[in-house]
Image 1: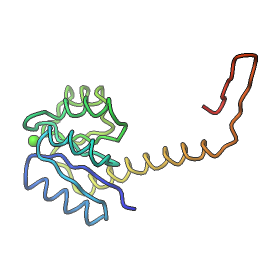
Image 2: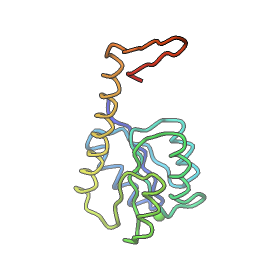
Image 3: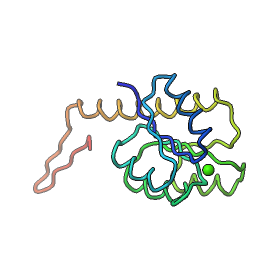
Image 4: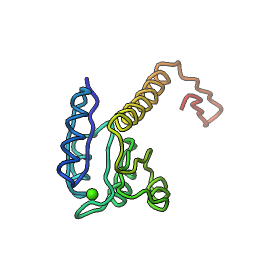
Amino acid sequence: MSDKVLVVEDEPTLLETLTYNLERQNYQVETASDGQRAVELARQIHPDLIVLDLMLPKLDGFEVCRILRQEMNTPILILTARDDEIDRVIGLELGADDYMSKPFSMREFLARVKAQLRRVRLIREEMDSTDILPREIIKFGNLTLDLTR
Ligand code: CA
């Protein structure tokens, strides 16, 4: 199954370009052009990665990031029009995983998308493999200690 990417961007041309290039890499792409819709869609489709513009109508990217971070640990790649250190710091504090300043090269964008998705896959595989391990449980009177968990 291909990875699902939610792209949130209010500039139609950029949204189209990003979608086109992601689809060419066989990702399943869903799009939103305002922050409110982004939150709704993320809750609905549980994407593997969210590409998030900062300056958005209704809810800005910071708000979207803050809300979603409380609900899911999907990686968030932030896009910003300004190479502003403050934006970067706030974004990372809100739990964004990566950052790109516009304009950026499509190759670099795709490489970063791939890197984030690879990271998610590794974490998932690791979690799956710990589930398979025999559970080490120590019982001591009324106390039960599960070492695996
Ligand atoms: Ca924007």
